[in-house]
Length: 249
Image (cartoon, rainbow, N blue to C red):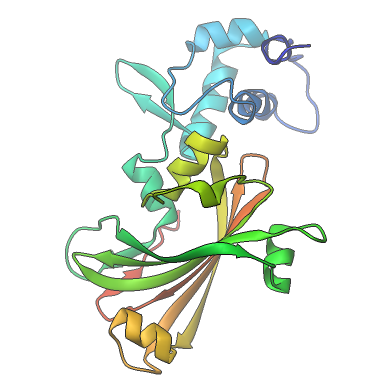
């Protein structure tokens, strides 16, 4: 059975373990995972999707609303519903939470310091659920706002999920867009943990701060649309003039 045939398979209007709209959402998510719907693509109308899935238009709308709330889709007034692209500003800020104490939030610039293959540490193996013998690709870069360094981050990727990453001549600022366009991996969620640490001599030299100055350590595991871990990221951040902001609602 092809992807399109599977997507058109009727969803019974019955009460199961999940609400019907959640079952429809899963069917629509499969189209994202399988690449049938790609970033920037205009989706079929609610009426057409309802026809394909043999459910009501209201059920489809509720499923689309849920995906929109998770920044997977974008509603554009008078134009329709589109698959979200990783460079959309609200998606960028979904995964970047540092804001200046004064002024408007902006997305930081990046400068790559080092890259290379490595044998994973136990933390990397556990966080990325790696098999024995798997290798990882590590990127270290410094990120700046208005020309001032605010954090150093170390990014670890499974080589198995990102073949030929080391063949890239340029590593762009927006990695999540790169994952999506080159490897078809969309970051759907991330878990972050925050901890206070002191700056090492190396951190101090790169960030222009004092040795032992307090830094904010942010560890993040990013997952794809099927909730599989695909990236481990450690960020050591100066918070003299920035803060970590989250909306709780």
